[in-house]
Amino acid sequence: ICSYQSQSIYFPLIACRMVRISVQFGWTKTSCVGLASLALSLVTVFSNFSEGYSMGKTSMILAGSDKRLLCSIMYRVYALINIWKEPIQAILPHLKEIYNTSLKYGMIDYALFSGMSFAYRAFFTGSLLQPLSKEVALFIRNNLERHKRRIIHLSVVPIFNGISCLRGSSSGTENAEKFITEEHLAEALRNKEFMFCESMLAIKMMCSFIFRRPDGIKPTARQYLELFERHGSASAQFVNIYRLFYGGLLSLHYYRESRDQFWLDRAAHAIQKMEVWTAESVWNFENKLFLLQAERHYAFGEMD
Image (cartoon, rainbow, N blue to C red; front, side):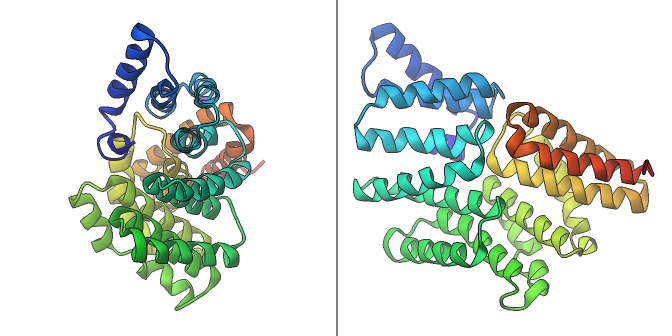
């Protein structure tokens, strides 16, 4: 899973090799790790959602009742694969279960990644902010005091700040422009922490759109949206959904004002992606597609 997070170009090769060895020399209980990894590659790299979803289910069956093995498989399946086929809200209890089970069996990395995944999925799918704020704060404190994983901390802090922004904590809506700055984004990009940078961008765009303050993020959106289109053109990651969704909505707003083709191209790309994903899960994506399409009609003056 480390290669998936840091050098995802190699991850499909490793997964295929693992499965090929199992096919050649025989399947064992641990073969499910390779199968789940290949399922993840099919979904995120090749956009073969149905095949990856089916293979992920098979990997969980092969894992049997081995709790330690199940933690590694369930993280891949529930956090990274099933979100493209099943209602995301129904996955949240499973992520909590993975977090607690992984901690119990000493699998700290899987516990932290599942906790981080829960925070993002709960935040973006509209969970109640007050209890979520307490859960995320506790998760951050536990990581700082016990585990000290820098990348986890960097990834979850924007979620906590986003919650504070939406709840009106601290400096209220003004916080939307201040909790993630150009310096934060640039530093993450220099360090090649693309997942962290994209997460911050998605949260910043979401808050700017919700509070109707699009002008403050326009230069940032212009700089980073096309960059992430190129960088993530062949991948389907969870944060892509919301970077594309809010980026598309903001792009259509900017296009109405300027008639700049750059913004229309960004919006068209977002709509095209959402159409593909809606074909896989109506529940998760159709509402976002409809709103993007409605904004596009409004941008062209098609009001009938």
